[in-house]
Image (cartoon, rainbow over all chains, first blue to last red; front, top):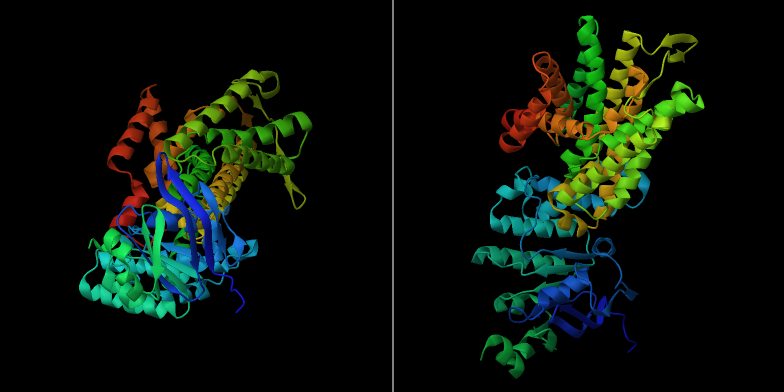
Length: 248
Length: 318
C-alpha cells in the first residue's frame, strides 16, 4: 500500500523552557479522519505539544508538517487560517460580547479572503453560519446573552461553537470535559462524535471513560516523550502506561 | 444586531448631525464660533476613540498626528503655495504618514509600553518643530491670511463664520459616520476582539499586529484630517498643538464622553471645552480642572457620559 500523507506530522519536535525540556524530540503522526486522544500525567507535555502544533509556542528544535506542508515557521494566526483550530483549556471566550458576536468573529474569518471582502462581506451569510454553529452545540436560545454570564459548561461549548464556525480541518480540544457535570460530559461526547464525522480531532483528556468512548487511537505522553500509542484497549493493557499514568 | 436597532442607530447619528446643522441658525456669534472649533476637535477625538475605545490602545502621542496634519497643510500652503484643497490633502497624508511611522515602531507594544513610546515620539516631534523654527515658526507659529476657496465658480473666505461652521460640520460628520461604519463593520468587530482578548483573536486566524497597525493608521488619518481642517479654518499653525497638552485633551474628551461609544468623543469635547472656557474666566488655573477631571473620570466613571447612558438605558447604542 502506498504511504498516505498524514494530516499532521511532527518530526523531532522539542521545546525547552530554561532548564526544563517540556517536549523532547517527539515524532507524532495524525491521519485525516482520526479521533486521537492524547493522555498522560500532569506535566507530561501534552499542552506544550499541542501549543507547538497550533503555533502558540515556537519549538526549540524539530519541524511540524500539516497536509504535507512545513508549517514550522508559520505564526498561530496563519495556522488557524489553514484549519488548525485550538480550543482553550481554560475557557477564553470574549466575556463582554454576546454569545452570537463571539461566534460571528469566528464565522466571518473564513469569508475574509481578499481586501474587498472587508467592505462587501455578506453579513447575512456570516450570521447564518454563526446560527448554524450555535444550533449545533445547542446554544441557539442563548445567542443574545453576554458570554461572560453563561454557565461554565455553556462557555465550554461556546468555545466549540467558535471552533466549528472557523470550519476546521483539525480540531484540537484541550481537556474539554474538565469541570463539567456528568450529563454535560455526555452531551459534549455526543457533539464531539458528531464533529468527528467531518473533522479530524485531537483530544487532550484526563477522563478515561471519555477517551475510551471517543478515541480511535490513543497516544500516551510522559515527561515530554511519547511512551505508547495504540487502540484504547491496547493502551489500557500496556504495562508502562499503567505504571506511568494509571498508577498501577 | 437586529434590523430595528440598525435603523435606530443610523437615525440617531444622522439626527445629531442634523441638530448641529440646525444650531447654526440659532446660536449667538460667540457660541457659533465655539461650536465650529468644538466640532473639529471632536473629529480629532473621534479618531482617538478608534484607538482607545475600540482597539484598547491608550496613546499619549496623538498631538503628533494632529500637528502633522496642521504642518502638512500649513507649511505646504505657506512655503509651497499650495491651494486649500491640495494643502488639506497634504495634511491628511502627513497625519497618515506619522501614524504609519509610530504604528510600525510600536507594533509589538501594548498597555503602558505603547503609552510611553507614543509619548516619547510625540515629544521628539514637538521638539523638532521648535528646533527648526525658521521653517515652522516654532512656538510663535505663523498665520495663513486670507485663505479663499472656490466652489462652483463662487469664491468664499474660509474665515467667514458660516463657511467655517459648515466646513467644520462636514469634517465632523464625515469622521463620525466613518467611525460608526467602522465599528459596525467586520474590521471594527476584529478591533474590539483585539481589545478584549488578543491571544484568542490570534487563534481565530487574525494577525493581531496588523489590526493594531490598521487602527493606528485610521486613528492618525482622522487626527491628521482634523489638524488640517483646524489650520484652514483658524488660519494658524503653531507648535502648541504638538505639545503634550494636545495629546492629553483627546484622551480626556474621549474618557469623559465614553471610550468605545461612537458619540462619546463629541459629548466629551463639548462638555470639556465649555468647562475649560467657563473656568478660565474665573481662574488662570484652568489646567487644574483638566487634571482633576481626568483623575475623577479614570477612578470613578471609566464608562464616561455616553457609556453610562448605554449601561443604564440604551444598550443598543454603538
